[in-house]
Length: 76
Image (tube, rainbow, N blue to C red):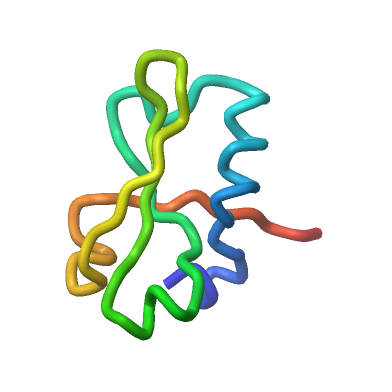
């Protein structure tokens, strides 16, 4: 979906840099780009901000687009 919109899903590092700009995902969580090795094993990563800390979690890729949105960037 992200590529069809012309954007790139944020990596974990980019997500952490985004959190330096403000407090995002305090009540939600967002999918982030998952390394190919994890994806090939059926996993996916997502992040959120709780207790003034950025957390990274994992889940099965079958729920990759269910319930959560994703954070992305657009180069212009």
